[in-house]
Length: 335
Image (tube, rainbow, N blue to C red; front, side, top):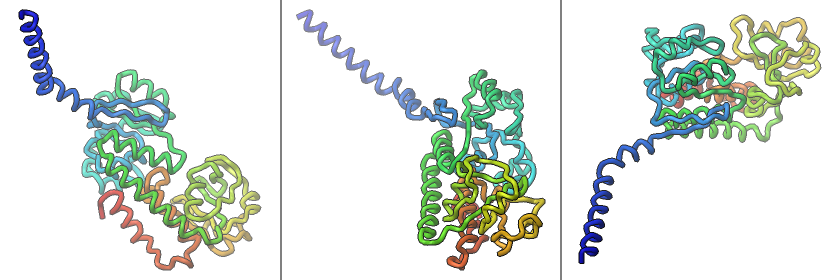
């Protein structure tokens, strides 16, 4: 009888423990586990956050652009220095009154950071180029999580936005933006399938000799536009002599934005006379970097422009201003 009574009491006590633990202690732990985030950055390192980042120091302009696309700008407590200079300054000022008023600190960029400033901001996440290994080591030594970025392709851009969506609790928005961009590029590719690919030479702002080869984001841009890169070398960025450009004889020359050189300067360049692109005046410059940054989802605008330059006779309704307006409406939720 006593053993039965002890067994009953023990069973009741066990039930009480289960009830009380279910009603109280396990709820916050369960909630915390649901909020915990793990992503792998471009270094192959796992980043662990107990909850979505609330205080982000972003030292990469293209990455910052992605954060604004996600609508997570309120989490940003510091920006890269270039946001306050050059062409992008006006764009960011229109996106964020804090930048317009220069209220957000700028503790560094791709080649320099102020560790003291970063620590004072008490960030729960720092976004920085993966190649800045010394800076990353110093920041991580202080226990601050670091997401290292390295972009070589459109797929890398998709990964970055996807990971930011997780880190900033904007997963649904991130997936929408990625799918929209992928569908836009897929549609352009389908439209160009039956067209003869135009042969393109891409020219960086450093000068006519600076270009990109087959293993590059530029090559991906040209392919997505239904064109062909004339550069038959693999490098992402290389310098070639003018004789090679003449030998390739491109149908079109596409220029990265250049505030010191115009399309006419290239068309009239004495060393480039006789090639198809200059003879037919088919030299085109991409708009400002912010509008078609190849390391953001805005690369779709650059693809559309190149596709139109290559196949314009098949697409007479293309309106560059309207296309740009529509892209900003979709990517940034702004007019």
